[in-house]
Length: 128
Image (cartoon, rainbow, N blue to C red):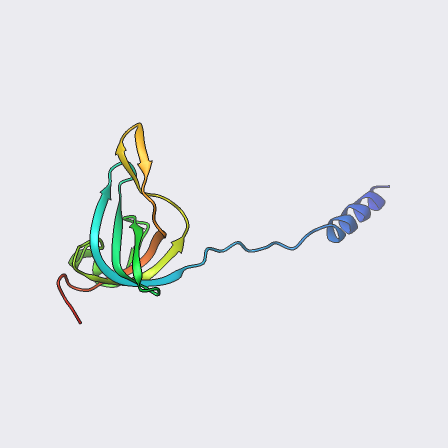
């Protein structure tokens, strides 16, 4: 009796199981000139306005979160990421609104394209 129940359990778990679907975040490339960095007072990260913003020649904003946004080599001590008048290249995850400005409990979100995951910067004032 136990063997029959075990066999039924194994067969049904194989037949009715569904394959796992990977839900990975898609990182998109970006590049641009830092024009306005604003500190987000409620979420403790930086909202950065880029003009021009690449891949589309437009104005756009992204959010830089310290310890979550990974700087490329030699960027940690030399150049902080939200420094104005620097060019930046990197990758970002589109979607989440993570910059909140105000005084607790009255914080409002500031719209952005997404969150920076990796970033590298030029020296300030450098123009190619």
